[in-house]
Image (cartoon, rainbow, N blue to C red; front, side, top):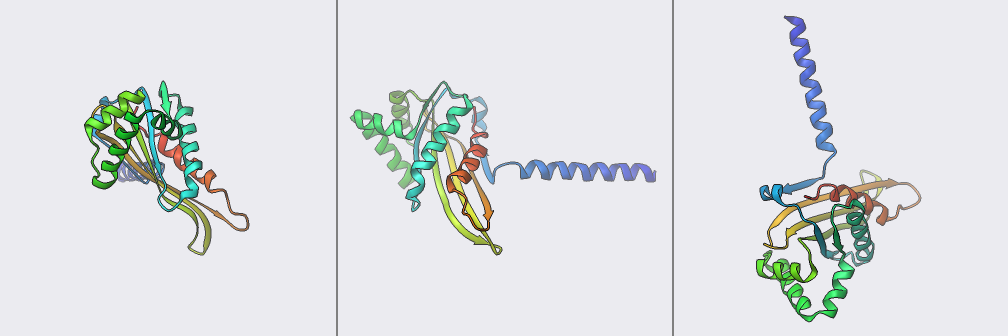
Length: 199
């Protein structure tokens, strides 16, 4: 009887340890819409990389996101943010639809289904990825100097404008003398997040 209780206790401890290990290996925050189970986009467009006050992060993050999404080879077509800007400059209908869509998204937090579908049809994308940079810099935490990058991502279905997935994640890298490149920290954040995109 005593041996059975010890075995049950050890199994319980093992289960808790495994659960904690799995929980620590994920993103800081990730929410998947139930409808995403049936959502398998073949093509994706990076709508925008929003950097807020961290304008110096824009070029690096756009490049990293484009590379990481393409590297996975999950999508037959990837339109990165830079390519989308070029297309919008060459196509006034796309430019207007994109500007109006992003304005509603930013000011009203409303993903307009009509505009979403229109942009998706013009650029031939099944899904849109929006990237937001919340933290990009160096700080002191618990008496340690750290490089820190914090990002959020949102994935929308182009045909409906529906938000399928949203996530947030951050990474810190401590240092003593030489500051690590923030783009290197960002690569790890983006790699972690991209691996959770519905497909």
